[in-house]
Length: 250
Image 1 (tube, helix red, strand yellow):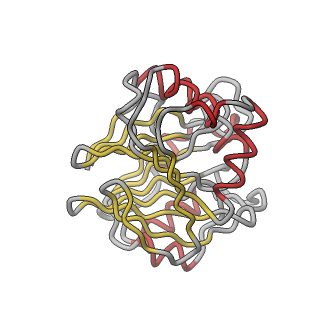
Image 2 (spheres, helix red, strand yellow):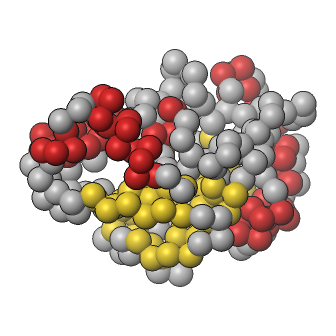
């Protein structure tokens, strides 16, 4: 399983692309979130419009799915014919349709490929585009869900945004890779978000092999955060703060 960090930034970080990760396994590719500017990064790094099979939207905030009209428009311009699968919380089809119609009212009627929606409730387990997909609610917005991806014996856990809870711990158990939002360095934490300290403690509880911290607030990223991470004793776990464009394989 290969993960390409197309973006690692928080909602209003002008210097970074919004968090978006392309996951490839067994010849299939799923995009995790596609915010304001993530669609541009995606098409720059994955120029073939047929190379992305599915999209997971963790919740309905602009920095996680407002890049979708650009993405679909790029597929249309490239002459895509392959069906595209869009997964997300309850209401995913209505939210996507409203958003795309607001941006480009005629686009959905012109595209020459099928769009299939997969609606998830917390606790659902489904198989989409070669990936086993299971979810749980996470403490952020009303719709937010964390996701566990399984493929070829590899396991990835991705939070989107949110404060970690017991359901997340169970869903993330023994994942080889956890991609976790860490908005702040330590407490106090902005409501509905997590911190580096909370994410590290979570990784220990869930026995995650490697943790990638994303969605850091601007001032946190500019701190000497890597030196802070060295102070943590994580037994067999590893903590990484990825850069945009970085590739990680498990």
